[in-house]
Image (cartoon, rainbow, N blue to C red):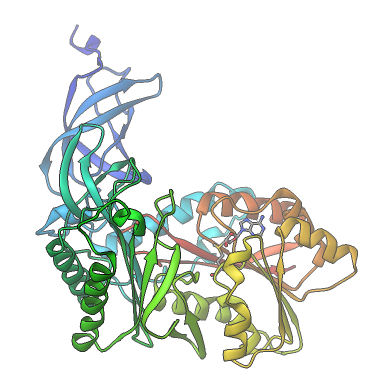
Length: 490
Ligand SMILES: C[S@@+](CC[C@H](N)C(=O)[O-])C[C@H]1O[C@@H](n2cnc3c(N)ncnc32)[C@H](O)[C@@H]1O
């Protein structure tokens, strides 16, 4: 009779060992149960927990092959749990892995890449031998060179809960909520200090924070960029300039001058501040860049990566982890070690345009970069000039369309560097990259599943074999992972 015990929705399952993360914030456990129908049933846990914790769960869904459950209690902490004195700071979920020890984060990420690529085992019998050890981010905390805070009135708009002065990050999954907190683990102490100073000062002005729903009131965003290698800071304060229109007792110029004087006074304490902007922001969308006014210093700040310099404006696209980006590019360059220098590189999917500059400077005769978002390339000519680079060109096009035309014109390439967005490559582009017949393809990916899918196509339809694979952690404390794969012509 006993082994007929079933499981119902809302039942509590006790002492369950959490095996591993399977997707983003979903975890896997396996049930040991007296009833053979349920024994070894998979449980998908839909909330945050450190792997290898022992927990009590509440069943929320019963499916034929698995159960879904929520955590009720953690009975035993995982040995991989990092002490987090102020566990509030990850509630915005920007750093949700922060309470997993960093070595374990790396292990989880490496396994995720391996598992995804194991799905193409038909072609990769020796897959494990091709993996080099995962590369850690050179900076584990405080690695972000750019951060954007929002002023916000609601703790919860849905529940009609207001607090009148919050500044921090939106809560993930609940955009109408904002966490009000004074510290972020992903930016350094100086960025945190400057944030706190601006926040404190803005409270003293008695000007209300903007209401995104009603599109009125004043303070909107604070943007701080601090370059890692060149150590220069840019500040930007975004506000609604129309707030003053019907306020007869408020002098707009006087208030803006007060803010300006305060922001400029910060440069005495933080000599790294080289550029300060106002953003007179009447944009209905919740973005911080609008009508920009430079109120102090220079228009751009500088960053150096490898042997290159970049000018970064408030609107520039730039990798957010400078030390991580430098490491990633060193690895890509190392993967592409060639014994001659007279070759053409096609850099497909450009975004920040750093890879082409590195190759153009290193050895390529010519680099051609392709990107569909025109605004991401707006600084390329300036940055090319800054680094005396002439052997480059930029094509504003979808990669799939560009390749078709490029091949039709009988043009050639010797090395393909492919770094697509999470969706991976378009089928038409995949088909065409094989027509180049290059000696090597380097595929950089931020999504192991689409990487596996695209590699499977290349291996099945082309004459390439995988030479080596390396995962690189650019974003510690998050689920993101980069992978570099070198494919060589057989
Ligand atoms: C991962 S980023 C590239 C990163 C870049 N290599 C770097 O080092 O900064 C992917 C880029 O691909 C662009 N993109 C996505 N789909 C595209 C397509 N079909 N054609 C061209 N560009 C595309 C996105 O706009 C994005 O800028």
